[in-house]
Length: 245
Ligand code: 6PG
Image 1 (cartoon, rainbow, N blue to C red):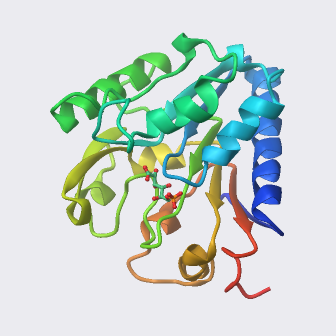
Image 2: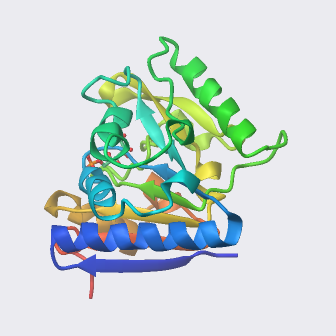
């Protein structure tokens, strides 16, 4: 079954984050009323920080105790490092909202061996979702960002990780940064109900056009995300500037 692609363009950055927060909460409340819990994987980078702050500030009455937070990817650094996605989420959301610590599943990226960190995270995913050998987790929502090169999570163009079809989490070598990133694989990013891409700014406009209107071969990593339900692109005007509308 093909996913439903929805592109929402918001006039300003503030409008974008408010709309994204409202949608996060709507999906979360629906999941909790249907399944008793909300499982969501957060994206890293700089764009979502404001969304996370807004969720902490305006949605303290959200059922955080029934919400389970994971990370779509992580940099191979300790949790207090400036580049850590966990640190960004902790500063903007976890330290400000009543989210039980045991509901937060961070990548142990402080482990010196990135592959060991990936395997450890995969095992915790398998145990949380009670998965059999060839099964994939089914998140309610996965948040993703978009790099100017068309990468998403830490699946970068021309990287080995693009080929992975069995593992849930891998240590993907990123040549341009000369480091590993710990990231969900394509199968995990597709066995999900809804995916929300949150993208802002003029530096993303060309790639947004390529992803949503182009048909490059091979496709950019961000073009290969096919959730089971909705593929939601939340854009501000600047990021949508080159789209035919
Ligand atoms: C990361 C992300 C990555 C990010 C894009 C966009 O760890 O960096 O998961 O995929 O979403 O690189 O990053 P910005 O939001 O900083 O532009």
